[in-house]
Amino acid sequence: MSTLRTLALLAVCSLAQAAEVKYDFVPNFLGTPPGKPQIGNGHGEIAVDSAGNIYVSVQEKDAGLQVYGKDGKYVKTLALPNSLHGFVIRKTEDGEFIFAAVLNEQRLIKCTLDGKIVLEIKPDAFPADKGKAKDKKGADVNALKLTNCDVAPNGDIYIVDGYGRSWIFVFDKTGAFKKVFGGPTQIVDGKGFANTHKIFVDTRFSPARLLCLDRGNNRMFHVDLDGSNPQMISNKGLRNPSSASFHGDLMCVAEIAGRVSVWNKEGAMVAAMGANDTKGQTNTPSVKPVDWREGVVTSPHGITFDGQGNILETEWNVFGRVLRWDRK
Image (cartoon, rainbow, N blue to C red; front, side, top):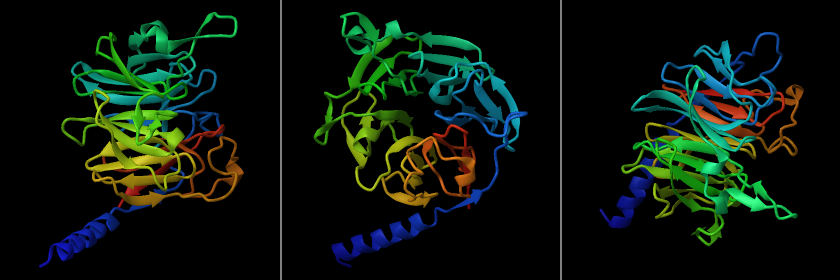
């Protein structure tokens, strides 16, 4: 058999395998807190702990971090800051913790699953030339706009300045600063990092890599954990990737311009759900519940796999909205 024919056959087999990744939409899965018709202003993230409990960040006064059972019923609210724009739940050598970037306070917190803060990285821990700027009067102002974080296998904490200049800061597990990379001066395929909305440590690979959702350039790529060796995943046909999660060899992506997608380890999209092509209904927080359509997204902002490979997605929406797709 010729080489070209062999490659063609492999490609067909690969496509056949990709077509087998399918999901069913689960309507009306998540409940609401007692006495509330909606979850509340969503501009954050969603994650699942090892017991299957679901955590949703809500940006309203006293909203905290809402916790739901695996059945979607409201359990409790953790008394945490109301601007957890990005957070992850990770197991470390000392237990299972929430690591969160607090956008309105420009700090990172590590806390137990009950909401007790056990580590804090404050704004003044970031390098002065990246974390501060001068206002028009020459006074120091905080230039950080921290949007997400994750934890490497060795305990290092990665934090991205995604609404600022897209610097990626690295701290050790005690909160001591180690290094910074990314930003507008690190060039990947001719462009600096821009609105690198969220980052995630991708342990599907060995050694692990850092996934960068470079929303300002509508692309996603890996770098090594030291910031070197950029490897493009996709820079075409995306809808502004905003968040991601991993399960087995798969990655799901929340695309704020109206789609949820699933990608394999080789960087091919193998499923797409909820696509919304209605003008004015994507990349906006203002779509009212009366205009929501079953199984159709508006502005996907956060996303996670659960332990069974099902997908939960939370939207940028002032009323709050979470959608679920189960793996067939």
